[in-house]
Amino acid sequence: MSSLVSLLRQKQNRNVADKLARYTLLMFTLPLIGFYLSQHMMTNYTSLKDNKIVMYSGFFAVLLANIVIGLYVLMAFGEEEPKLAEGESFIPAIKLARGKERED
Image 1 (tube, rainbow, N blue to C red):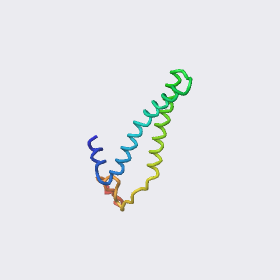
Image 2 (cartoon, rainbow, N blue to C red):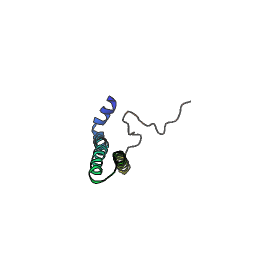
Image 3 (cartoon, rainbow, N blue to C red):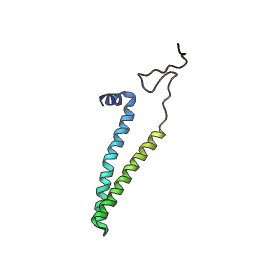
Image 4 (cartoon, helix red, strand yellow):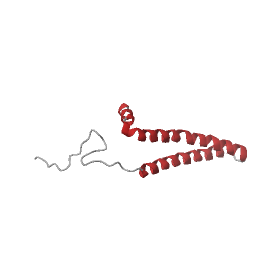
């Protein structure tokens, strides 16, 4: 876990860490807020039974969670890929060996 934190603190990864933190916060708060807000609205403005209200509020919370996940995926696919030089890797510790022949 500490290696993940150290990777996210690196300068080139701060943008990724910010997006991850924002969407994690949304994934936690938005469904909870949606659940209790929809439960309050249905209790006050409909004549549904309590078990139906809880069920529909839960469905709404799940829908909100899936919307946040979908938005995260769309954002991730919409990002441009960084330009890498020949032999360079996304992971700094890994150097790609291209053009080398095997010595058997």
